[in-house]
Structures are given as structure tokens and as C-alpha cells.
Image 1: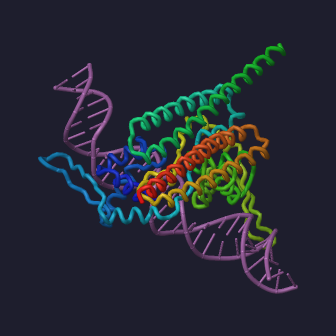
Image 2 (image 1 turned 45 degrees about the vertical axis):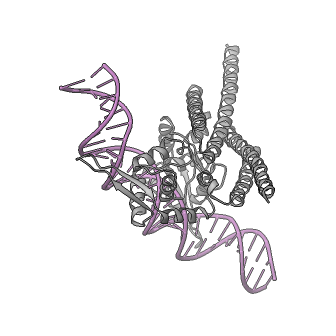
Image 3 (image 1 turned 90 degrees about the vertical axis):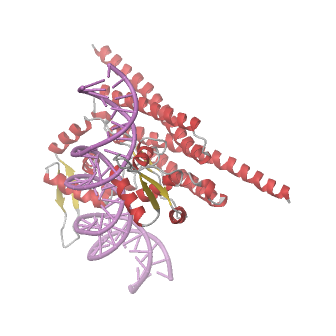
Length: 182
Length: 182
DNA sequence: AATAAAATATATCAATTTGATATATCATCT
DNA sequence: AGATGATATATCAAATTGATATATTTTATT
């Protein structure tokens, strides 16, 4: 699925600017499942306009800065649902943190611990934001997606907390063993 | 983190060909945290060679097809650990399936159900492959990463199974209500 | 034994996407 | 009045994806 489909899908819920789409796709409730930047969103909107899948009203009144509010057309709707008829591709998960973790035995224990603690905080924040979004949102299908994220992040948080605890226990033992040798 | 670092990291565990790296990064135990294609791996290996971070032995004996076995150099090791000293970027999760799910009320119920069932099977497969890898693998840090994937996929599988059950209950009620009207 | 299919292996390339930056206005705080 | 941050569009080099081409070796099928 490409950014064009992403934009078309988001615009099927409400008309908005490219800036708004980016906010949803990079910071908002959508951001935990799909991402996109200005560099792909604006070209995508241009292409969608060319194809007649979206139209925009150019709100450049009184010398105000241009502000293009995009909305999906009937043709766009048809195209969107044609796309959604195809099989969705597999989930993609990329974690630089997990890659780093492969080298934990080659790092200082305290450095890896910092990574763990930071990741726990990060996961907690994500979880909180997803739960908040889930409470506020009254769009039924969004609940499913948000709940998916909540379930995933809860599991991860739990896993990380347990690992941190066992990590600290091990470190204590290492320190103990070292002092035993003295 | 870019594909160069990914390759360097993988090569720090064992020498191998670009083909092997791609297998690890797209199909193997690494694939659930990072991905890469030939199109990025081969250029990355060229650059790493130019930089002196890896070397390769060109095994093209007896008119056999060329086979470049890459290994990391001391300089490469130093560079890798300099890179790992920086903060890891955030996890990235992209799910076309979840995007599709936002439109579940605009699909035929049976179509969305198919998506759910397929996703459950897919998750089960991933989980199985991660658990198998975890059993076979005796590299301690890999256990952490694999366990992370297992925890995540277990939570997702559980969530999907529950949702499917409630979905079927709801559908039954809808059918019931429809026949009540007759 | 012959042949078909699948795996191994390198390589390239157009299309897409990222990540960063430039520009300018508007809103809010000090 | 000035500073900071949010709103908003746009562009571009660099990185990555996804697909394809090529050729050999291994495995499975008939």
C-alpha cells in the first residue's frame, strides 16, 4: 500500500489539508500503524488530484497563506474500495532498539540498562496515548485498530519490565560474586 | 539506522554472502525486527567494502559462479560500536491490515471475516517460527529479541481470536434480527 | 535417467519513501 | 515588541523498496 492510498483512505473520513494528513499519519492515532512524511504526502495529493480522485478548495483569500483543503471524489471512493479489495500486505515491524539489544553482551551493562529504561518509558507513553485515543474516539472500526495497538504495547511493556527486573537481579549477583572474590 | 549498519551488525556475528544477509533480514530470525532487500544490501556491501569496514573473498574457482563471502574488519567493528553508541530510533510498526480494518463497516462482513481469519493464521505462523527459533538459538541476546517478538505476537493472536469470537456472535445476532423481521 | 522445480547467488533500476530543509503566516506567551 | 511554537506548503538528495534479469546448483518428480 502506498502513500496515495493512505491519503485517499484518510480523506474518506474527513476533508483536510496535507498538513493534517501528515499529523494523523506521523503523530496521531494513525501513526502507530502507518507513517508518511510531507515529502511523500504532497506529491501523493498532486497525483490524486491529477487522477481526479480528490479535489481541493484553494483558500487563499485576502492575501492569506494558501491552504488547500482536499476532499475525496466519487471516483476516488470507487478507486479506494477497488484497492481495499486486494489482499493487505504483511505487517512490518522494525525496531532499532531490538537490533541494538543483539549486542547487549558487548555493551556496558549500565548502558544497556539505560536503553531498557528509556524503552519502557517510551512504551508506557505510547500505551497511554493509544488508550486515551481509544476513550475519546467514537468511530467503531478505529477501536479495533487502537485496541490492537494497546494489546501489543501492553505485552511489550510487561515483557520489558520483567526483563529489567531479572536484569537487575543478575547484575546484583554479578556484583556479589565480584565482592566475594575480594 | 541504515542498511549499512544492519549488514555490519549481522556480519559481526558471522561471515556470509549478501544472499545470506538478505535471508536473515527478510525471512530469518532477524526479519521480525528489521528488513532489507537485495537492492539495498548489495550497494551497502559495496560501500562498506570501499570504507574498509568489510572485506570479501571472491570464491570464483573452476569457472564456478562468483560467491563473495564478506567478513567484518577491525575498523568495521570500531565503526559498528560507534554507531551503537547513539540512541536507537523509535520502533516502527506498519500494518496494512489495520489500515484495512478502519473500513470494516464499509465492507461485506464476510470479507472482513476472511481478513481476520487470514491474519490469525499468519500471526500463528509467525509466533510458531519465533518460538522455534528461540528453542534452537543459543545466543543469549537473541533470546531477548525473539522473546519480545513472541510476547507481541501472542498478545496480537489473543486479541484477534477474541475479536473474531465477538464478531461471530454479533453476526449471529444480526442474522437473528433479520429473520425476526420476516 | 531425464527433466522440472526450487534454492543459491549477484546485480540492477525505476518508483517510492525518508528525512531534512526552506519559506511564510498565524497564535500565544512574556 | 519580540520570541516561540503551531500551521501550512513545497522541494530534494539520499535511501529503500519491489521487481526483474541472469546463471548455476541442488532437490524433487516422472
